[in-house]
Image (cartoon, rainbow over all chains, first blue to last red; front, side, top):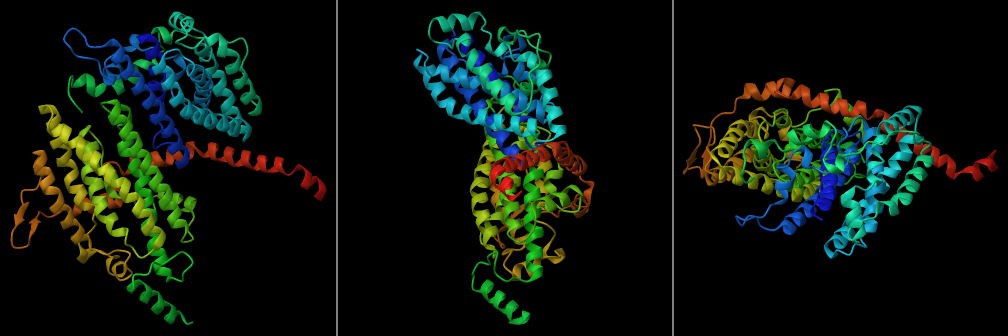
Length: 251
Length: 319
């Protein structure tokens, strides 16, 4: 259970972190606001999940419970369980939108299924998050179409982005051992069940955007089990700097 | 009505505290002054996102990260409604942004200083937003209606920003020796630039007299600066931090703090573009604008196609 929640939390934290990198640098002020909104939602979701993990772990022998910040700031690369997709660099705006759209497609159907979890805390968390994620998916789907269909330049950038990120799309809907176990207990989401919905949504939006998914691409995976791309180390080096340099202090 | 009568009527409205609205007659100079001032304010919000945005990825806790994201997002929002307020005067947002990018428009010099340690995020909220509020509270009563109303909304958010900044300073000043050192270091660097935010001495200020007559401004630069010092000194004392001014002392007779002279050479040098980050700030805005051009063009092209799709029948009939 704990590792399952960490998977969900780490996805939200790392993608939120990447979106935060845009703040002040987006193509339009309105986009600055929208991307920051999504970053806020995701970071908020990560906080709830980390807090829940802390509750489940309970106090250690010295009577101290872990806080949300212990999970975010004091674990190293191999302990993070996010998918490879979310740690990929922002690149240009096309890369950011394609990364967001692929993630949102998974996130939406996963979260919708999670509202049916037999775990009351998780189903409640999913209810609340689903409202936010519904907006994220609408935002990224609309920008897929705007940019895919807009101009020749935007179309080419979007197609390039899809081709470079497609290799990370498979991991989202391929269950690892933890996910299989939790799905069998009715707590977690059965990814095999939502897979058709996720792929249908992606195909539908790609078609509406005049974009094509590449075929015969090898699907990278490993993030969920702590085997990451080289990018995550740099994200953590930056994110964890203060907590690592000045341990145990209140901020 | 002759323009002389119009001008007299306009001034009588101002004197009677009746707000000037977009469709009312106003002197050209009033309009120009407001467009200049409101757009400078909008540019300051947008450029002001950069020094704080610099620490979003390094915020030391999830709570601080959320607050910082929300704060920088508020600034983008303030920029948007200030540009809208300028548009009610006949300006165009894109033209105003172009003036900023071309280096022709000013923005608050304070954002040309770097954020070097985490306490700077506290100092910006406490001192920079604190100084801005002094000015903005006055502007909620400014004579131009849309500007005054935008300021009411902005002030509410700014006072939240100031509180969160001061809260960071409290945490740092009461923290470890290293944290306290960060807090003192940031106060040392932000104190004087914050005092400079109120502008030149009244005797040197080019736009002040007319702006006071038109009630765009209601307090002079020096009055506001004194008000800021008076409010801020006890706050620094509460934190146990030292304000970097050996001349600072309470003057019983005046009922105000006396303080040292601002380094006006530094002030004018930053205004003229030679601050530590003037070039970097402008470069970042230009980069965002240029890198985003294809995105904006695609959005326009897509919207035009959608518009076209909506009209197949009517255009067929017309043909």
